[in-house]
Image (cartoon, rainbow, N blue to C red; front, side, top):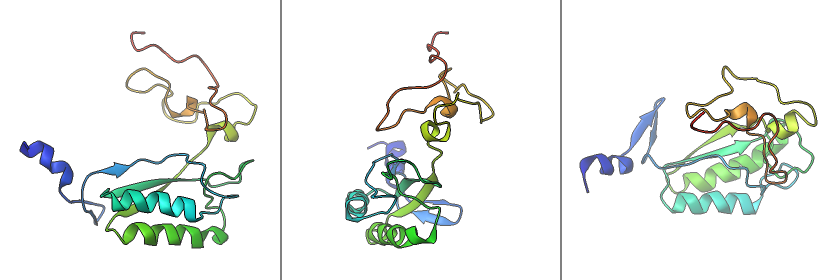
Length: 152
């Protein structure tokens, strides 16, 4: 294997924290929480990824209550136990875990218009940036302007 391809399996230190390799699970809206609580399904899901050798797992977390409660909440201390169980399960396999606090645009804007909330609504590929990515597992519809075509 060429040297540059081997680098993905080498440890890396980010912000003083060593990660065993450069392979990451990105945050996903899995819908495994139960009224915002992390239970066995979610703990097992991420532990299996850690067993598989990922160096870093990024978990999507919600800072407020949403209608269905499918996502893990972090707006109250009562959710700490589930977060702790999940972190312990992942750490048993030498994997690091971080949380990404999601905005859940579809819920944040409810039925109102999509507002530009970032420095730019257009990505490097001239596609709508995060303020327009408002589809959800339960409502895949996009809100706002039509997406730009790559050649526009």
